Length: 224
Image (cartoon, rainbow, N blue to C red; front, side, top):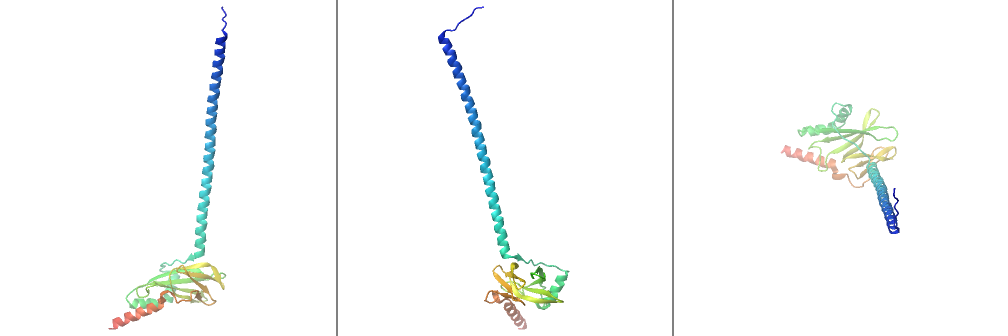
């Protein structure tokens, strides 16, 4: 076999080529490593941003829920009035409102009897009966009125007479009875015997007076 020897210029070229090749490999590795690190940093930032956004959304949702709860508690629990034919409370309501029912029937109208119940006492848990009659002969321009009765012994005692608007039971109380909110802004407080309006003005629309005026006018018109 023959041995060959490389000239110094060829050796220098080979070393240079090898060095360049190694540098290229190093650069490719660095580029790949940099890409991986950038991807990792981006992913971490994305995860952190997503986590922050989720936390913000959760906090915002919790804040809205808390606001709704606070708003609902400040307005109290509304008393829902519905028809309950055949029930004991419906029979009691018809007895208590017998005079108004008869008035409506004299005008050839069968009134719609709506009732509801709610505990008003902070200690005894006495359940009050809410009664609203709906008919053209009984409802004035301010709407139909609601009466509230409290069961004492064997009797029902009227504790709120002819108010117009939805009634809500508030969490606050006076003299052992929860406060009432009528029509969203009119607060009524218990004085030991009955509920008293905190507004000095007369009840909205003087509903009972309007009803009586309407009945008298209708009666005079028929007599002519």
